[in-house]
Length: 447
Image (cartoon, rainbow, N blue to C red; front, side, top):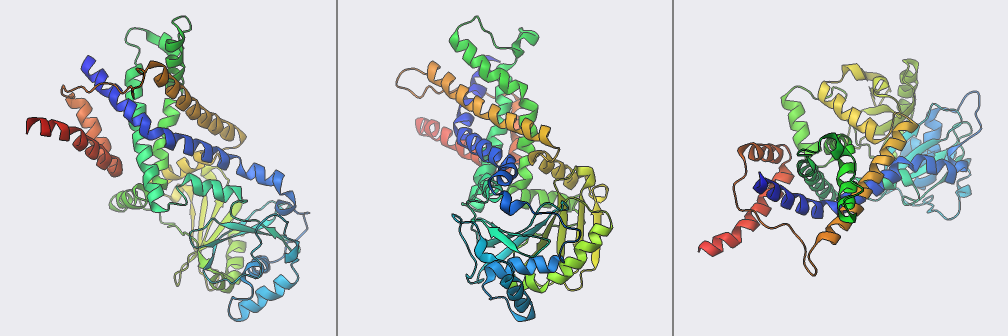
């Protein structure tokens, strides 16, 4: 067992080297995202809040005002005329100073990512636009007057920027692959760390740092005990983050759901319709929203339209509890409802994925926000204490990596590692590369 301890200690050490940048990046960007909406309310109240009115304007007019503010008259047909008319009364020039203003720019390559429509009468309507792979930027419309309150650059729109950075932007899919690798190695680091911490005779006292055994032991215990306290939360967040990744989520999970009959009947829409497409669908979107509200869909509606022909209007309510989740799919030409799905109608796997999303986004209220913040802070704590503990223990002038152990690995440990490599293929490929790299010197020695 001593040899196993040494081997796992070595894997824990190298996993930590790989994971530290990932942990710091995800902790910081995740915390920014948690507090982004709160910050936007305080930084830009003139864009986020309006005086409530008895009856807001039709949604199609609100959409056309936002489209006209950014499209510069490039949308086509009668819908473009409506957009320009709305923009003419919108006060676009009143956009706040100090932020990028896109009004009057060509709409070539400009997409409508989504519309955020609150059911709170004191909040503005937000239309999010995107140029290619750049950060999304919002345009805010007063739902009661149709006046465009202003817009922000992608870097000033903290919810979009922090979410994009958390998902690997601006590297695109390679960024997501790196985050998926970091996720897998973080799971290995957690598993090996728990084995290294295991009390071995100390009992429940091992849950508390030893204060009388010297500074080095105290620092190590402050690292390991905090890791154990949050271990279940760490594992939940690491596993529930995998569905968001480009490879595991978009390839492996989709294959699992398809082959087990667990695919969501509601489907999914990435949004991204062109300004002209969204403009032409604005009236059907208005009719679909009205129908959804009549059936009791509450909360902020996230409205999307994909760019391909015939793509449905896709609406979900966000910021609600999982039991209140609704997904409404509507016809893009006439606005009639094609499907209305509640949480109970979604299969188990996508429902669990949705639960992970809710927890990540802190949709369970202020307590959820503070707990997630504490979790992110604990990850930063573990990073700092781990580095300090290594620095204090390493031999002078050396990396201080644990020595190689050449004895065999127990069958149980091998089986767990193989299962992890199969379930997380990118992680498995990286493990194989490392094992191959470690075997090359031995092959040369025998040659």
